[in-house]
Image (cartoon, rainbow, N blue to C red; front, side, top):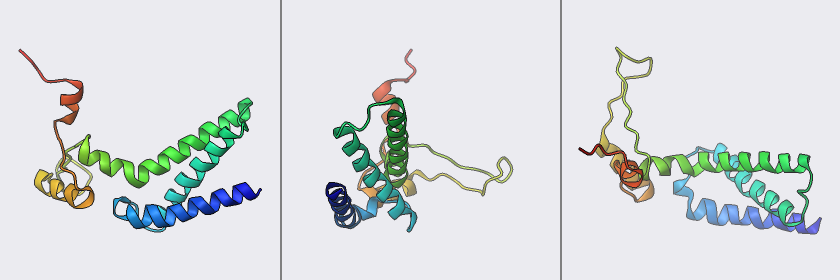
Length: 141
C-alpha cells in the first residue's frame, strides 16, 4: 500500500513540475480538462505499468481491464498533445468551408498563418509533402 501511495505522489509531483511547468505550452486543452487528461495519462500509465510489473495481469478479465486502461491513457495523451503536433509536423490537412457548400462557418485556409501558428506553438515548420515523401504517392510517368 505504501508503494502505491509513493507512486501516486511521485507521478503527481512529476506532473505538476515537469509536465505543466516545462511542457505547458504544448498542452492544447484548456483547464480543467488539461489537468484531468494529463492526470489520467500519467496515473493510468503508471498504474498499468505497475500492475504489469507485479504480475497482476494474468487472467482474461485483468487483461481486458489492462487493455481498456491502455486505450483510455493513449486517447487522453493524444488529445492533450498529440493531434496538434501531428497537424504541424506530419499530417498537414488544409481545410476550408464556404457558406454555399457547407453547414460550417466560412473559413479560408491560409498556409502562412498556419505555419506561423505551428512555429509559435511548437517551434516547427509544417511539412505539407511529408506523407508522400515518406510513403510515396507521387504520380510518375
